[in-house]
Length: 133
Length: 169
Image (cartoon, rainbow over all chains, first blue to last red; front, side, top):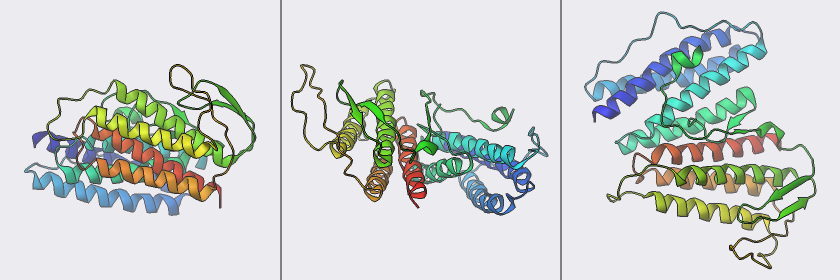
């Protein structure tokens, strides 16, 4: 079970970073609306991660004060940033599909599918095996 | 830098970039069916291009499975079972592309296919959606070692289906 806790913590840390960086995407016109939609999705996932970590007896990792991400200068760069965020999430979700808990695996698979589709939506490209590289 | 901040880094698997954005662009193709070795010239057909892309994903996946480390069967899905399921999926994709079965199989069991664009976009999307669902269902019993790969395949199929669905509207 400790392995599952570590996986949830890793996913939670990824969600913290993703939510922080999506703020930069949303600040770039005209991406405020799609970025806000993505933010809602990841905030929900972050809350789910916190619940799971607590349920497993862990102390949820905290968000860093800031992350080493350059603010995108235009919408094209912002879309690339958003795609890279989703790609990072697919890596975390793919790792979590290896959890011992079946429900965690299925949830991670669902998030992986959704994130892969979001990645394609932002960038127009898709790894053959999302999250595995 | 972003990767350093965000990436948790699971098991490595060969990465290929699938240019989904190319779906829908008419062009002439020369391909080899995944179970055969004879190149076949194809006329332009966006649906078939999409299916070809899906097929490539599955072939790459099967190749990845060949080397996937899996422990002894403890009541969960084994590597061989997953390989068999994906092989069947590849065969279904090839069959959908084919109007006739292989006429003269090669000694290795492979064969060339007469490829006719008979699939609609909706059929391709339905096929990919179904494949994604199948792979996800398999996650319920798959061993943790296989789970990431199955989930990734499902994600590929679902994303490709979404791309095709959008490109056709």
